[in-house]
Length: 297
Image 1 (tube, rainbow, N blue to C red):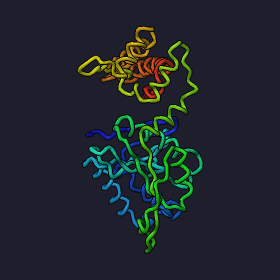
Image 2: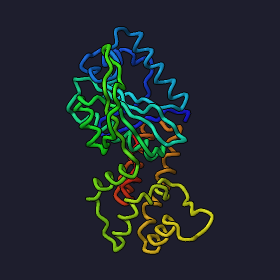
Image 3: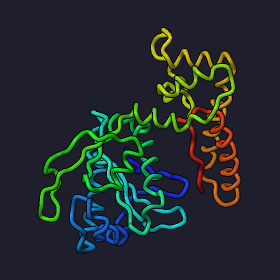
Image 4: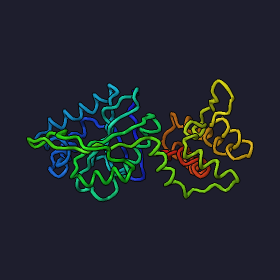
């Protein structure tokens, strides 16, 4: 991956961390409340913050992870970070970590950021296992992870060294099938009105929609037509006039997005408005896991 992926949520922008954010990183990680269960002591100088940013950039360049800065949409100040490290693409595994300035605790911000990052990692990066290492006494982080679906695997004795002493650590993990099942259950209130409801729901829960042409890509049926699940599902839905609407919308949205290149000012804003209107219609029609984010100017 050569370009750092910027992610959006309802309230947040998850962005690349550059040296211009060194003061924000220092403000966060020099706070003893933040680093109490962080696994390293509080920062003592701005140079330490700059070194951490260099490390974030290095692991991204080397393909070993990525760390997003958490910023409110209306502000350029970083209020925390979240990301993956120890990323091994060949093994499809990584570990996740995060922190947030105390001023923004208990506002659901980390829940929002974690939900988006997990979706990106499981879908876009095709990671199968995401682990987390925490202090047993860190009730806030452990509660957040468990709410997201993480399960405790055990205790690593003397694993963390901080404040001149060795500390035990919890190891937690979340697997892609478990994440998908939880996400599907959360999205379950979205109802299908045709007679293929149960087929669609079962296939969505099993992940059969993950590679269908909901993003404007051609359907890949593989080398044979011996009824692989994706091909059979696609044919059944198409024969019953269920699928074409959102596939057509997806292709149209992608064509309109290409038209944004080189547009500025009023023309760009009008096209973005048209795209977002079609995205809204698309999201009502497509399976939950294939929904698109609105385009921001």
